[in-house]
Length: 73
View (cartoon, rainbow, N blue to C red):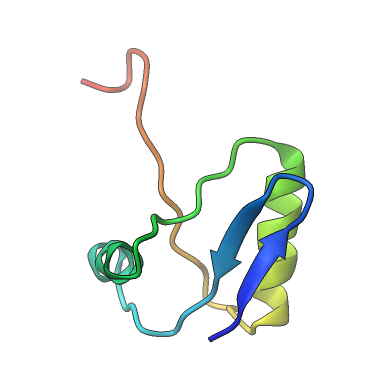
């Protein structure tokens, strides 16, 4: 599977069809020495969205996130 590079931030992304749920997606990424994509700004969001659409990920994608603030209880 081809790795896509967002040249503006130096982050590489790979779309895979191996995962059916969040836990499997996380395991798949970690087995490749990577983490699930995390979105930090509009530019990253646009890049990941375009990449997902171009790869036919029409049913959604799994993203990594960390809860913070009062909601993290």
